[in-house]
Length: 360
Picture 1 (cartoon, one colour):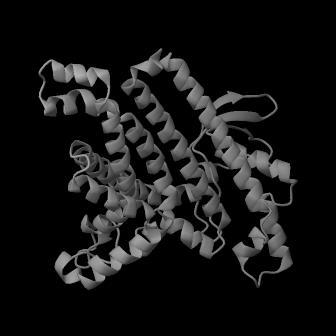
Picture 2: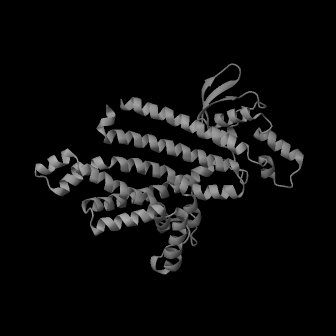
Picture 3: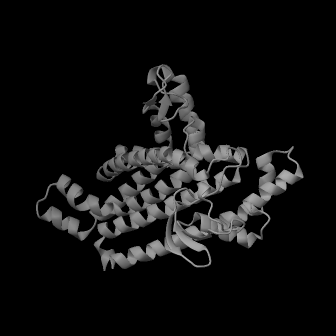
């Protein structure tokens, strides 16, 4: 049953990714502006613009451009290896290392490769290489933020549930409500101004910075964990507030179940009932919420990364939008969609393990 459920989720996830790719491709192709003109600049002559348009395949019908775009993105794709003028010619400069799976007599081949998402209009680098540089920073920031939200949120939620209707409970609920209502971009500006600018001499935290920075003395990269504190805390405020409320309400609901009363009747201590019996069953809605927040963090991290100078996907997509670098924007959006699908599949699998009712 678990295998069939996982297979169904993977199939559904692939369809979602294909839908996102389709929408993104046609959406960005109806926007005003000529990519070839953007690459060469406003002073480029028409002859060079036409050459670039032909190289990019922009002179072909839109449906052929879409088929090649999907073919480039797919890790298993078909290409014509013999005819260099073919629209689907295998350009190993773009794809890098390829492994041939099938050969056909007509010159067509089926290959296994790394997805090719185009080249930046500004730097002419492949967007895949740019994403591989920026993605680890965003993942580290999102993971630290969600870890902070999960640990601190569950801790505060348990305290609020155990001390229901006390001043602890009321104070935690008020703060969590305020945290949910606080926009990330405003929180980022406020926290950066207070802890890095006003109190920078006390906190010793930088206003901007990345996880690794170049040492001015020897030129080596040095780890700067302090640069992670403010953006991770800022990004974790809203999910932490959600986790507090979910953890509290879920634990209160579990504590009213019959098996919990039975555990108390057997003489088990209050702490043992909470940690062994109640807490595990109350984590299901929390894990579900965390999965959604982790994936959406990569989409909502844009303002936080840009304000704190954290060079991740958010910082990258803002710069790309400033220069109308459409391949970079499209690649980042598709990457976030793929991560969103993968995270949801993993969480659905974990949810099945935690809840025995879903295994039937």
